[in-house]
Image (cartoon, rainbow, N blue to C red; front, top):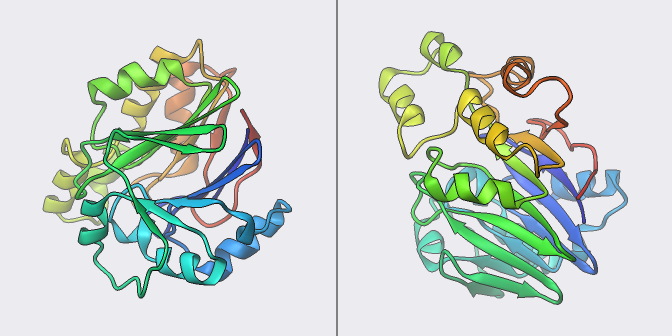
Length: 252
């Protein structure tokens, strides 16, 4: 399995996963032109994608789903509740497949497990892509470290895991109090420390973790890495899903 992040953060999200002959896109929060160019960086063509999986209805994950479907002919997979709650006009969609949160999706010999999350979306899910005995988690916009997440991580070989904010930066930053409270709430995002604790508990099984969905205002890559290294040590393989650029390729 090969994967890379096209972009990760509140300004737009998209991740590519290639498992055997199956090519998946997860989320469509960046423009079609940008996605196409970033796929080409690693020698991939977005027209070859077999499916676009939408995690939830927030704009930074779904805004360009219609473009991906019409321009690149990529079938869309999402829940009905997510589709109904999309806050923008996706335009005409001709190839949409609905699933229920918790379902398994099958693409040839690849199984995608959909994991319900407590994030404050209409019907949010994370994804676990399973192929040839390997399991990759794509786990952002999680709300809080819920029990099913704690149980899931030790079963994975690798993961994208949100490490959204540093508590001190959030408190001292420009966000109003109500928005700070939303981020810290059980429907918000994981802090660096919460993410590090989760990885620590699953560290014996994980080959690597890519820190994802870092806040631009309330986090910084070095701050996040320092927090994780303090908990995990410097030998644990951490990667970064970048906020403004395509990541390196990562093998599972």
